[in-house]
Length: 302
Image (cartoon, rainbow, N blue to C red; front, top):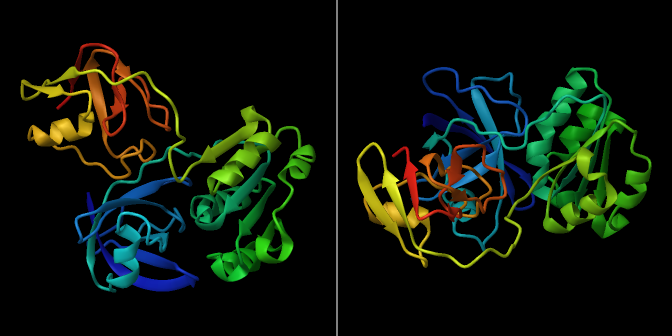
């Protein structure tokens, strides 16, 4: 973890605040476009937010948070109680949505999804790569950083407020997509579904706010062996690996509990994990919040 201090809290749009988190003792860990951090809040919640500032600025991180009263209380705390000068612990940046090299880019963002896309557009323009952004929101007042983006990038950016213009035609945009362009899309599920229908799958990269509902085989009980301590933890069919480890005194840092943030990643030394995440765990890794075992026993680096 890294210690930061809340340096600025600004109103970025209706129900959206922007935070600048400064490193009080020196440079913060480096990051690349698409990365996010876990923020440990004083109300005992940990939440994930995309970094939306300049990766070249090692002195501070910028994030933006939309107030959603129907969630578990992270945005509520930030909007109502967080104040400038507060110390916050944040994780090292993680990136499950990296910007890969391409001859041209189309970025599509919906609402708060603009946060992960902004640094990508910055990097593409800085490298001289042709790039454009379609930024869609409910209304102009609800869209954070819209004026900043249009003033910086001019006609590379198209801002669409659906209360005035309706939803843009992604299918028409897909029909005009240059043959080697990559599309990066982050936004609500309806936008991602439209993007999947409009753009070739091999050239589309997406980041979701929430996990996609899927069906899995029924849960079965298994054992998790903590290799470093020698402890064996029984994981019942009605309990997650994450919760079983916590109850056994082997807590794992966790954030989303949906398999989309990667904060609860574990190293698997033996056994066959059953991956249920939306990230795509690499070989020898698994996410304890949602994934289970397809073998009777897993050996974990714990």
